[in-house]
Length: 144
Image (tube, rainbow, N blue to C red):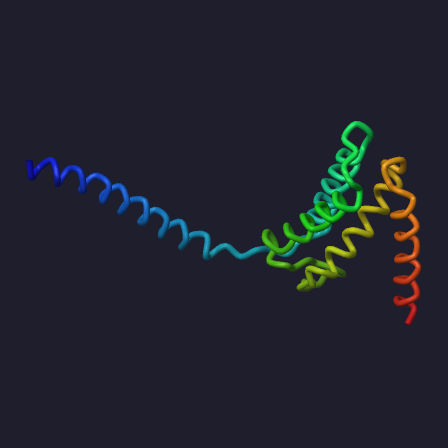
């Protein structure tokens, strides 16, 4: 009887020990990994994936809400930069930490710009007008 109780508790305890021991070793290994900043190739890849998602999700037959889909695509772009690259990019050959809200805003503008080239029929007129207003505003700000 005592041996059965021992086996009943011992097997799960041994399994748990190995599980935590392996997890501890994994944490030590992953703690030593340094996130590298996103380079131009990374940014181009994430941008391309965002445009593909945006155009596919808003095409006829799917007809998902364009603003919501754009928000998901740009938030995903910023999230990948944050999680995979520690919120850092290489711009002008210099590593920079980026503000995620600003990055998401810029990603939205870039995704709309690309969608206007790749799948212009999917972009609502209101979004196109808003895009033109924002890009003009940014051009004026850059001249200051």
